Amino acid sequence: MKWPDKDVLYTVIFGTETPAGRRFDIALIITILLSIAVLFLDSMGAVRERFGTLLYGLEWCFTLLFTLEFGLRVYCAQNRGAYIKSFYGIIDLLAVLPTYLAIFIPGASYLMMVRLLRVLRIFRILKLMRYVNEANVLLRSLNQSRRKILVFFSTLFILVTLFGSLLYVVEGPDNGFTSIPTSIYWAIVTITTVGFGDITPQTPLGRGIAAVTMLMGYAIIAVPTGIITAELGREIRREYDVRHCPQCDKGGHDRDARYCKHCGGEMEQQE
Image (cartoon, rainbow, N blue to C red; front, side, top):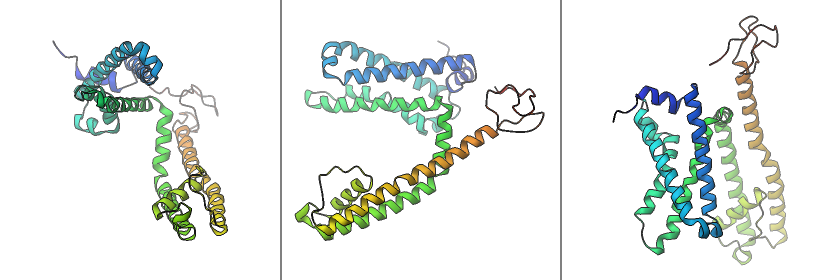
């Protein structure tokens, strides 16, 4: 049997500009969502007892479909090695591996491990990100703010280490702070305002330090939000400034704009 032309397959599978490519993407999104729905249903004991055979058959159908998709992507990729090592290439592989691994793990005692392996199929939903244009704006914003976020987390690590060590000295093992790592765990839970309550300071000085830690947590929690929001605003403005009117050369137009909002001239349509 003759394989389809690689260039045609590449345009359909990796591209979204053609009607065939858009139809392929829509079909793939629907298939991903259905497979995730089957995974959710399979995790419910009552549903699995009643429809276990059907869900198992559907699971294999989806696995074979995604295996075919992965094989076609490797076949028509312009750089196969780069695709296989890429983020989405790894996600595509994780989407099909667990079901096949389950075949080679026999025995009732390993059923729980098999179930956990199948949960890895939920990574398949990460593939939806490639079909959302706005996701690229968010990813670029995170990439632009990565150094600021690194500095923020480094500072946060120093703070939780400092407060955890202080509580270890003040409270000690008698009050649940049995080691510095345990005390750092308490500091992380407290500074992030989660507050599990499994470890609590008992002395007045310890409670005072805990109060300062909690208040600092409220102040710190807004920092990464502000960093990412600022970068996201810049990316959104950059997106809007991409299109310029050929008549007046002013930017700030939507991607689907047909006429300039400044002079009314006709905009060049993007593919």
